[in-house]
Image (tube, rainbow, N blue to C red; front, side, top):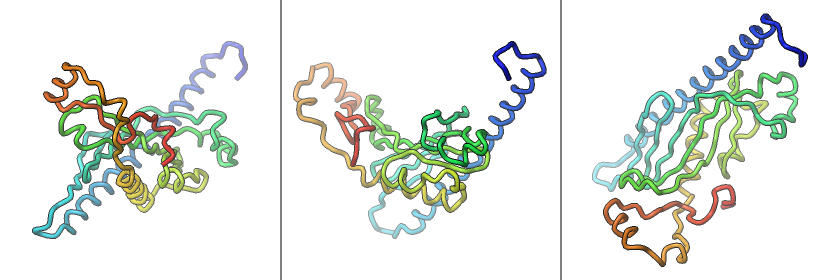
Length: 228
């Protein structure tokens, strides 16, 4: 279409084509998200079956939070899987845009996104609203059920072959396990002493009332700069 004013038929054609594409991407992403839900629930059930009677139980629980969110709580951590309801396209300078897979069919660059966040379980238990969570990965799913993950360590390195990676039950299981392993090894560090040495009476009273001393696994550092 040129820069001139489009005709009604041209406008409707673009509307129908782009709308149908985004609906297809949304449908595939939702199907993928439901697959993650099922596998996460199965994994939690398998853990409980292996728990020995009389032994101290390290919690591992699945929570369905509606159509677009679920949580896995294990030990002192919570993983939140959240599907965005919109469809996105990779920016022109993104690495995947240089692949022949995208150049052969630009529609493949439109994706839905599933985010994986890590929070401390106590942040929710004690309603510590100032605590910090981290985006440890985001899963892009396109109309052909190909996927690509941007993430930290195990997650980002293992699942980044967009042209050939197809989301299946097996790969979904691997992604969940990798996210959990990264979270377990992502230890809680003490905050810098300089950030804690001065506390007002109001801050202390508020902390005592609601346990709201800000806590995060990497206090004082931006997640993007965390190379560990």
